Amino acid sequence: MNAGGDPRFVAPVHAVNVFVPLVNLTAANGPTEYVPGSHLDFDAKVPSKTPSLKAGSALLFDYRLKHRGLGNSGTEERPLLYITYAKPFWLDVYNFDRKRYKNLPPVAKQASRAERTEKRQRTIFGGLP
Figure (cartoon, rainbow, N blue to C red):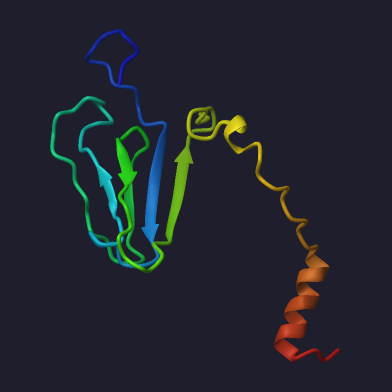
């Protein structure tokens, strides 16, 4: 993509998405659709792709690639691990704007290391001291 300058210039990758489906993704449960080449030309006029992925496989792509999750017409959930790796200077202010998430509940208090250890020991040893 260029910012109105030389049309031959394409900015280097600044972020990469990694999708890891936790169940098999099929046409019925809504795979991710993407437009090949749209990270270089947002208005690319090419057919979109909707790969079916096996649980545990990974789909990696440039953050700028046009993509979306399709509707889930099945009865089962479609859990997906979604990770974004980005250069330290980059911040997505369009998809993750503070105003968009202002009504989220406060984050739960995290248990201390000692509390987590005690809980694990109770679980493993059945409450024995």
